[in-house]
Image 1 (cartoon, rainbow, N blue to C red):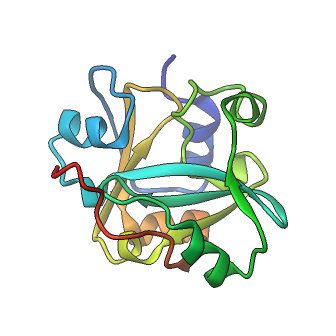
Image 2 (image 1 turned 135 degrees about the vertical axis):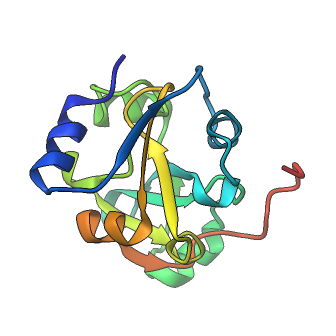
Amino acid sequence: MPLLQALRDFLEANRAQFTHTVHSNAFTAREVASAEHLPAREVAKTVVVHGDTGYCMFVVPANKQVDFREVRAALGFSSVRMATEHELGLLFPDCELGAMPPVGDLYGLHVYLDSSLAEQDRIAFNGGSHRDEIHMTTAEYRRLVQPSVVSLVQMEAAHGW
C-alpha cells in the first residue's frame, strides 16, 4: 500500500513542510527507527485507545510505552484501554493494520502528544503503510494536528534499544 492519499492531500492542502521516505517493511516503531536510521525518541508510534470520551490517538516516542495510570490521572479518565485489532481495522480501513498516521483530523479522533516527543526537534511517523514514513519538524506537526500535549509514557522500555 503506498502513502495514504488522504494523508498526502491533507499535508498538501495545509502547505505542510515534510519529506516522504520509503523503507523496507517495519512493523514496530523501533523497527522503523532502525530502518530510517533515526533515534527512537524521534519516531512516533500511534497508540489508539478507548477512554471515557471514546476513541483517541496517543502519539508517543518509539522508545517509550504508554503509562495507563499516568494517562488516567492526566486526562481524568476513569477507564482507558488499547483498541483491539478489530477496532483498528474499522477505524482505519485505508491503512495497513498498525500503520495509521497520527493525524486525528483524517479519522475524527482527538490526538494527545506525549510531552517528551513534543520536545524533540523532528518527528517521523507512519504514512498508512509499513513502508512509508513522513518526516517533519515537531513544530510543523503540532501546527497541523493541534494535539493536546500531556505526559503519556513511563520510563524507557527495557529492550535496550
